Image (cartoon, one colour):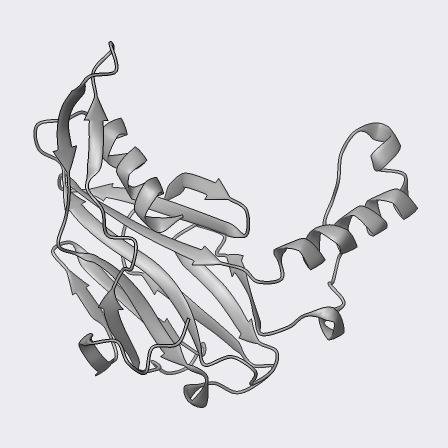
Length: 203
């Protein structure tokens, strides 16, 4: 996606403030400026009753995409996007995408990412696992290091505590690196309903 013709909600900021913490991007030393647009997948989440009839809808105005133009990045350098607080858990994953969430003071905060090299990582993991005999034992394991010469654009890796992602730019053939973020207050529905809504919006 190109962002040149999209209206920015925030532009060239170094933190995105929520009611319970902040999102930042760093190169391990200093903060990197980024911009924020409305998430293109901004739809109400329908809450279903046991008989599949509609019970209500969940929606939030704070469903965003963090946009980092490649001119702000250096090819091959390691970067990190993270949230400042919370115990983070897996929210949802799909083809090329994964997202995580935390709950703080009745607020659910989530972050998601798209990895354009997901298939290439899997192919390398499969080849490594076959060579090491892991396939015959029933599992696939990532290699100690990926062959990044086979990657295009950028790659993302979840942080160890799931509070964000490590990422790296591999070339300048894309306009921007982006991450979906969202926060919503838990009100009349149980927590799992809001987690499902985050999964819909962020993956």
